[in-house]
Length: 251
Image 1 (cartoon, rainbow, N blue to C red):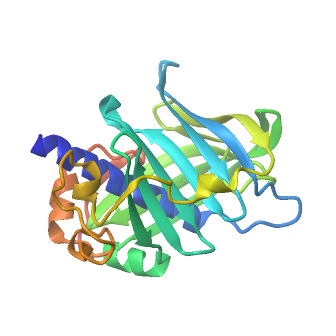
Image 2: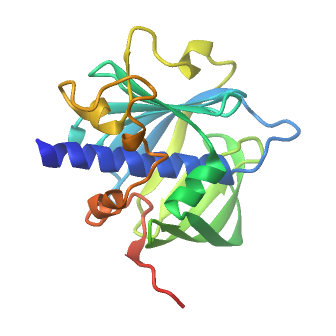
């Protein structure tokens, strides 16, 4: 039970970082950019088998990502409100949610998070009917002293602020499908009504009351107050960046 809780917490924590990276690295909207849409997010393994499916909702207010935890251990929802600088992580099965102030600069500093990339243009192709620029990207992400390197190919449309398709070196890929452009319901980008608000990730994933409390009562468990043990928890956790990980060494 304890190990399962740690795995859930670690996966959720890494997912937060990935989505924060996405929100921080995508270009700002311009011209005829599509700011409001929904899509199915599909992950396919090197053999062509669909291994994960989720939903993405985007609006001018923020983003909502619905996804399944590894090994089918329960769905999770992440909601970002850039206008309010708020982030919610929701556990639908337990009807709980965690609320955090979202400060990108503070989080990057706390996580010792840095990124770097090199890009090569490969041409143009259509994905889901949208003309895209195909790019080869080499990315290095350093997170909590762990360096992850990845090589990928991305398909980016001038109309969207996120890649429509990302293919990793092993041939696996993630793609947005069934893209529907249009204004999304406002309640998708709010904390869920009728759910219990908890103060930390342990309370979010546990079945009982352990770690629960008011919004000010559990700052020690907040992901914005990173503790060294978080690094230990994810050392043996499979990174979803798609690349290799290695310990950061001082030059």
